Image (cartoon, rainbow, N blue to C red; front, side):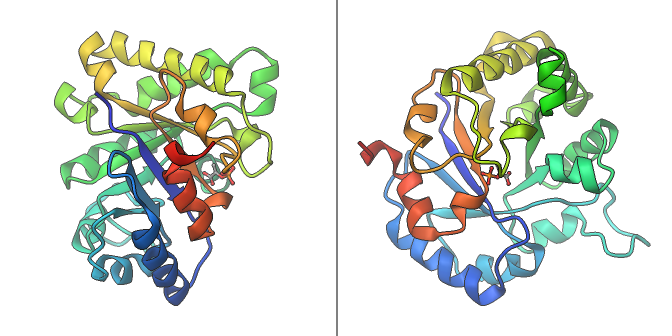
Length: 251
Ligand code: PEP
């Protein structure tokens, strides 16, 4: 049985004080312990959020470097993320791929070092609008998943969360329909089955991300293969985000 995981990706938003305030509200409003709740905060907020000692909300970074330490000015290592109490880290978000030179190769290196330091990767995959129009969605996400999981053994593979985030749906207000998101996520699960086994694939959580909001989260979460959501804009307001986590109470 896969426990749903709903993660808020705050992107480059919130000061430390704003982050603390938002998490305090979330801790009060989140009801459902059947849903794992994660906040992916800017690096500058992570220690302050860990110090809150939250019971219902886990913390994640939005990126990290694949080396443990060294002369890499401006980078943050998995050792540092573990040190501040991060449970998860987003790896390979499309914005990192587009603006900061992230490749399938660096995604795979980051996956390996995150796992080495017991930080669970949330690996993002997804196609651009052009790739979708050219009929490349299936081959692209399959290849991204194969490369991200390359060299990862069965036990570690089950610690990884995959986020299917079609680039054309991120921050645009355009969402893949629940059926279409589920269809692509099934392809991702079939890829994991080919790489490992049916049992391993059935244990790996796959989220949908891309303009998930209060109005569509319930329908998305009701799909057979969607195990959670990676939520950008709509996670910034803690009241709204808490209602999304408590989606089972929505009409
Ligand atoms: C994101 O930032 O990863 C994201 C999915 O954003 P939004 O929910 O705003 O589309």
